[in-house]
Length: 378
Image (cartoon, rainbow, N blue to C red):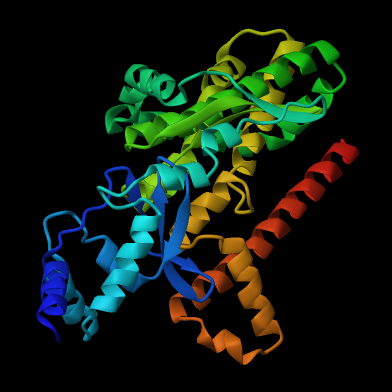
């Protein structure tokens, strides 16, 4: 090796790379038969997947450790050293994506066609969306300052106990509530009022996702309205959901919407149980309790794009869980040898998701049939 080449190699070994502050790295996630990590540039909105070995290296690029030190840690972990060519390849990949401190971050951002502008929705008569606030993250931060105290255990635990008690009452008096729901649909005025309250509950559902994400250091990108006529719903987009600090923080964030739906019902449950109401109003409140509970629980069904799917994906530690499970189960059904290439963790997760989905679907169908039969026989 010439003196110049040796000097270049030494300079490379002493280089201390650092990721830009707004670059996010996810935990390990199953993706098909592989384990991957997601890397996201929050400035451009672009993200990509890397394997565990690449993540091991990238996660240690903190500006403090040299490539020599990182390489020694890598060799200790994986039993082999990286040569200069491999380091150059990794640094070139990170540099061209604008992920390293000191690299030109504008090119990746421009190549991503400025996602914030590109994401500006098309507004049509039948479908479209519109942003409601200019700075969704600041709006969510203000909401968190006002309501964040409810996330403390001293407040949250008693509220959850009340919710569980309410749902127990709903289950025990389901026959009565089914009849009330049937009667509600014969009263257009009360039906309109109940539908309006349920729509408002969905708005609170979306904001709850944003507030809890903000509580864990998340960023809310958009708050707006989306319509697919005749349905008009509110939405709240969390920019870095998959990069929140821990799996349980992500589960709490996904669960927050359904919990908010049920908390919304608590005062109406109290009125239904204890207030002296006329028969029509009492039945309308009973129907609201049943429909609102069904709405909240429906959000926890583990099918995409529902919140329950996000929760199950986090429990399984997987990304694109439904697609990966479907591919694996088709391989198993065909007795394809490729199914054996999946690691045990992936096989367990995909099989559990497939069987669990069938079980949930059967429960839903059974509940619908039982409810319809009860209404027809009353």
